Image 1 (cartoon, rainbow, N blue to C red):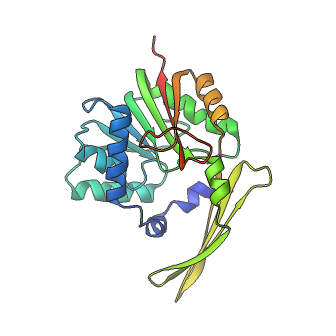
Image 2: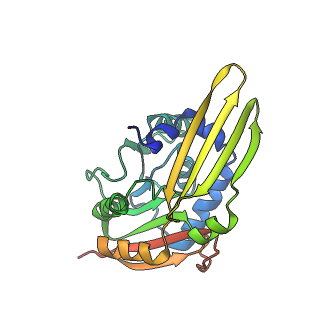
Image 3: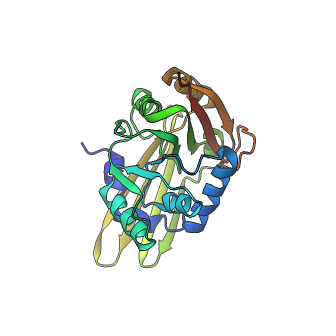
Length: 250
C-alpha cells in the first residue's frame, strides 16, 4: 500500500499551497539566521526541501554549500527549475527517504521546515530520522526542527472548510486521531472536466518532553525549544514547536 506522503506530494500539491511563497521563505530564513547564525561557508542540508523555496532563500542570504533532500521527484523537478531560473545550479539536490540520508557528505547545519516530521506510522520510524540527521551532522553541528505544536493545533483546529483556487473546488476535512496524537487531513479537489482527486495527510504531533527524549536518545545535546522560528519562548499555545539541538561531537 502506498504511504500517504508518497502520493500527496506531487505537482498539484504546489498549487494547493501556493500561498506559501518566496517572501515567506525569505522571512523564515532570516529568522533562522538570527536564531542560529549558521556559518555561511559550511554545508547546510534542507531536509524535505520540497520545491526549493528555502534553498533559494538561503542562497540569497549568502549560503554557498547547500543541499536539498526530498522523496518526491515532482517536487525536486520543481526545485531544479526554480534554482536554474535563478542561476543557482551549484545547489545539490538528492532524492532519498529522510530515514536514510546518504552519508556521502556531512553537514554543519540540518534544517527540517514546514512540518516535515511525524509522517511515519510509528515513533520508532520517526526516531530513525533523528538518528540519520545525527549521523550526517559534523561534530558540534546544529539541527533545527520546525514542527506542529500539539496544543495550538488542537485548540485552533478547523474541522471542515471549502474554498476555491481558480476553477478548483477544495473540500477539506480535519480531525484529531482517537489517541489524540495525530492530526489527519483529507483534501478533495474537484474541477470541471476532471475526476475528483483526494489527498490525505497524517502527522504525529509530539509533546516537548517526547521530542527531547528522542533527541537525547539519538545522541544530541543542548536541546532547546522555541515557539516559532523567530526564537520566541515556547508555550503550550505557541504557533509552532521549534527545536534546536547539537551533535555532541568527540
